[in-house]
Image (tube, rainbow, N blue to C red; front, side, top):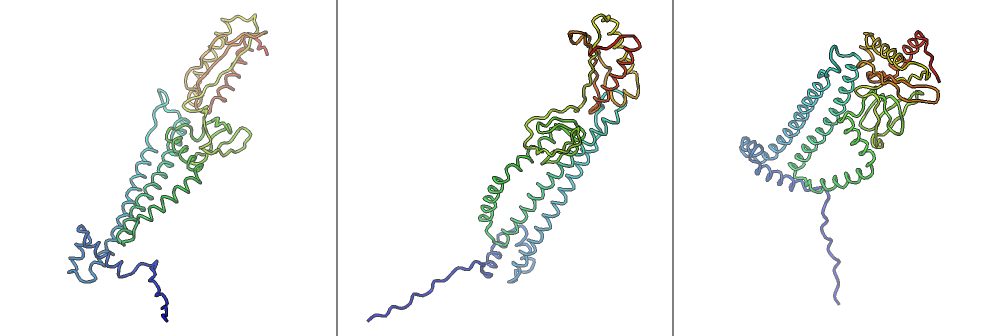
Length: 325
């Protein structure tokens, strides 16, 4: 009768790496590094512990170098962004630069520069620190291929789940780079119409005429109508009776336009160029309609239009010409 001996247990592999194996790998890697680690080991007379100590010193130098490079890159980005934000803006027209345009353009440029600087700093930090960590892991003989694979899979999963967020950030970045709109602009973003109060990479904050605040995600904005970029236009239609003399009315409106342009306060704070009289714009059942148009500074078109109405009404009353409905 044969007795069956119980099977001998198979050796199980431990998840924790063997210290001696790791040490031997670190020593071997140190010998292959002829740039720094092996030099340090030779300097220590190749003692039994020299390779390990040299490896630890190399890892420390790698970490220090990574943080130093990150600090220098951040300083370089800050200097470039500061120079871009404080660079003098071009003249809006001949003569002295309008204070309103100067402040608006400076604020928009500063906001774009600061936002792009923040993005560049984050990208630089991820790249530099990530490279430093991978280099340290390689020095510790930890295989980085499975780690990179896991990070890649995690990145795909996160990117798929947060694709709307990524879309918002990419749209916001291109919007800032192309200067589609900025703080103080009156825009039509489709979902809302109002004055831009804040612009970030993810959302744009608008305030409409009723004081309501709208938060519009940048990725949902398919088209933007900017009413105050560079300059805006104010116009006023003037309906007069058919029995009015066309030449007289036209001359009267041209005088109003010349007086507005001669007003130094208006010229420096609201109007870009002399207002124009387009003549008879249309004919209705009961009146002829003349039109005045004036280029105004950004977001100043309503103020210019109000001034046009006041001056036209006063000029028509002085000439004894009534306005029809």
